[in-house]
Length: 511
Image 1 (cartoon, rainbow, N blue to C red):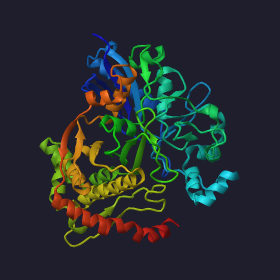
Image 2 (tube, rainbow, N blue to C red):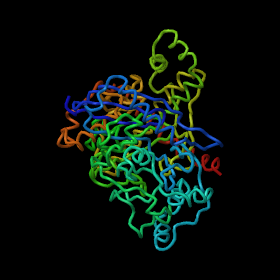
Image 3 (cartoon, rainbow, N blue to C red):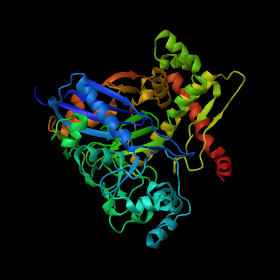
Image 4 (spheres, rainbow, N blue to C red):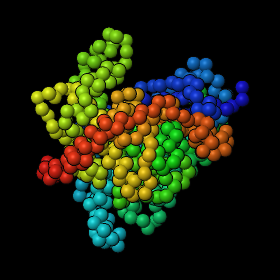
């Protein structure tokens, strides 16, 4: 058999998946290994043993060979991971402490502000508070402040993608498109910040502690003999640079053009559009590197997005989960029935989905809110209001992106766990007033990594060809005009007014 298959290793928040694709984008085989997202030793902390991730990668690959996959049929392998999870390594490449997972909420207040002419410029621009927020959020600053002995011993400071790359190919390198987090990275040039840039003051990491950056589709290295023994991958197989999971998901959903909005209904809900021009939708908040070389992914993120759906199911959905087990169906089918038992607009119940605040959108003081309770309100209303509130927030994000880019979003692709709900897709189409489509594969982030591998290995000559060959739409949900009109009235008249009315109260709560 010729080597034409592509292996994507996808290290998400709740599982590690090893996926084999053919050059047409068909999923040939998959192995999934669940992992604990994190453990917490104190409120707000989220950590994990880095070995958990590596062992899951090894197990997922070994399960593929146990299924009968011919490892010698692989042309290349690509890696995509959760974003912003950081790991400190010593001189021998061993972890010095647990990984700090992206869900971690630790902060370092009272840090020395950025000074010099950069500090003066930020004061004039009214951006000092934004820069101070970035400093406080940076895990490296927390480590320097609270665990200086760990930081002093840190030889390399890597994202999870860089750590797994090291375990696979034995080199401290990482993809340009995996650099999403609080590090001295120039998102416009897609390289480390220039030596005189302000980010080295804000997050004073030593350049030598950071990995070498490799462009998307370029080789990161070859699988070492040690990694081959642990994973079963052929020694010498090329690891191709891909992107972080959200960017890979955008590519796997076929969203290469700026007018296609990619909604991700995952632990964080996002809307992304791919642009060739660098555009800050929110000043000082950069677009992230896309899974296509030299392109940018304009993103608006709702932290704890579809986590709220999981929260509802755990708190109020035991009945549906029990019935689903009795009937032998997926619980999501019964939750869709719950949604359909309530009319669009949830009888006036409107939810603002800011369970975790953002930096500027919506703002560091934000809280979640539900208004409009009445004597007809049931838990079904609350569940539908969650789905509607997330779609309202992402529509607002799409409108911000359109204003800044000048390119209107005219169609939607919806990926992530929440995309499997027909009710959620129909609500999305009706609130946006746009057709909303599912990609042909649920595993969109893995497919995006495979597309990068296909182009990098020369199986497809370019990205337009690869997307045409490897992606397609499975289902499309058309908006109902009457329902859209009802939603538009609630969106304009209630939802968009909520934040500015509640913001003074949020500020008091924050203090």
